[in-house]
Length: 168
Image (spheres, rainbow, N blue to C red):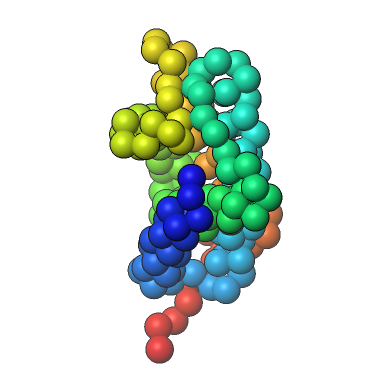
């Protein structure tokens, strides 16, 4: 990954975060919780990425320079924060059942997304053939979302106790 690619990706996800913040109307504590969840999810993503490479499920390369690796981590934290704001609204409206359906959706959507990225950018990641990488990728998505949502809940409290922020 080049510096330019990382900056473009981070700006795109930052835009998505701002749009999701606008539409979900979270309080400041919920935004902070979502970003904290993104930070935790980003750590888990790095571990999963390296672990999958070591286990032979995929072959990928993280940025080798510390500055690029930090930018990669920040962009993964920013990219997952909107997901946690969505899980907050789902939990607020539908409870545990809604979260379970959301996690199932992430398990179904995540691997095809990653395979499309791998097809477009094979220098980033290449998946080995078979069912194991698909299942591992789906489990990684579910684990990252569960961890991030739990961290957001620890920081900002349960979803049902939140009041929505008022629009000016």
